[in-house]
Image 1: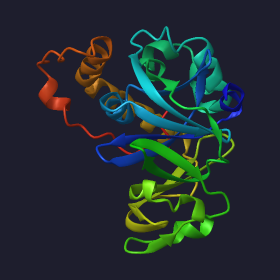
Image 2 (image 1 turned 120 degrees about the vertical axis):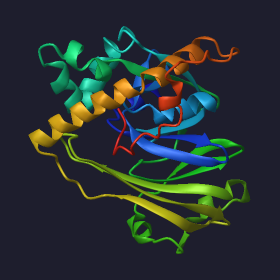
Image 3 (image 1 turned 90 degrees about the vertical axis):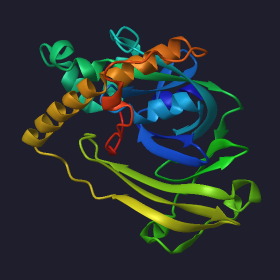
Image 4 (image 1 turned 180 degrees about the horizontal axis):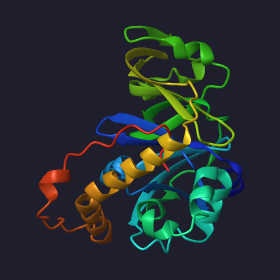
Length: 278
């Protein structure tokens, strides 16, 4: 399992919100013998949801891991700095380029301070196949991911269409909300694209109710990249009160988080849907 995760540049993380699965492409990392995923302080939506329900699944390098996640808010960067940063820099060139900039730890502080989810496996890892196209559903209440290589023809479905899935995902235990997710990246990892088809799965058929994203790769120009960094920096600053609450809740899981005088500004903030969260 560890070897597969260390060699995989991209994977798919699945979690649940209420009775529905969610999923996105991530950079899979390893700490010791445990899988790890991270979010910057700007894009913390999935970590907030995972803290509320820690049941997750990760498919990377062909290996599926079902786990419970433990959240840590790395305020000073000590946990991310070192091996995790080295791993991400090797897999995700934009991180390596940003880390090479003079003063990056000061003016990109929000990028190098992370919310870290360490995944404690709850079942033996399974070899299920590549993660380019996957079906995400709940099995036994836990997020579950099925690899669907060679099923690009399914991605043209529109809301209202029924998608006929392979026989091995037709069991009744999977019936309910589901997501068909596909992702693509260019070699430089500067163009990241995802397509999601969400709907209801029943007896191996997905009734599509929503479609979002695209698999078109559009590498951004330099000025657009700089603009994105400024925008994400502002978003990280706006998330400060929510990060404070999450950090407190992660340290004191049995205690209610103290009220923050700015909480009304950020309590219901919805993160913009990134192509891939780092």
